Amino acid sequence: MSININNQLWTTLSRKAWAIRENAFILGKTKVGSALIDESDNIYDGCNIEHKFRSHDIHAEVNAIGNMIAGGGKRIVAILIVAERERFTPCGSCMDWIFQFGGPDCLVGFQNKPDGEISQYTAHELMPHYPF
Figure 1: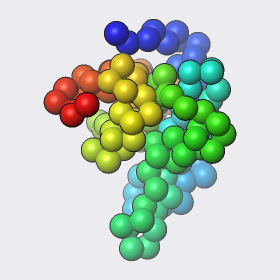
Figure 2: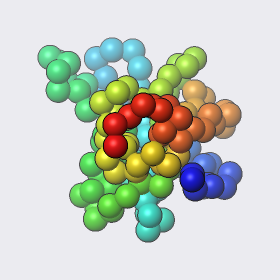
Figure 3: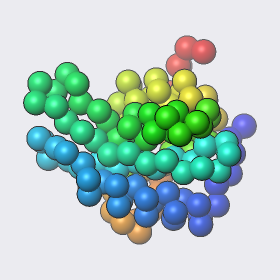
């Protein structure tokens, strides 16, 4: 069963994610920001950091999750990913991280412009055949 996150909390995550997105270090075209809330109501954020060889890129979701772990958090309740793209979802590797620290009921939101609509799914809805 998924946890309900109210609009005010999604708005807070959105503001944090769009703000941190400005710090992204990119070599390509897409800046990405992410913000999450953990089970203790702490908010962590992260942006993408691209590496010249691209095999070492740090995705915004993983950056936010790493900041949560470094800050003492243990479990993601909801994570929001923002980018100026028409449609997007976390990649499979990022979904592995989301499942590891959020589980199938973790809420995953996407927003393609500030103050735009937030599409919301559970991790399970995005990857229904994920092995547990």
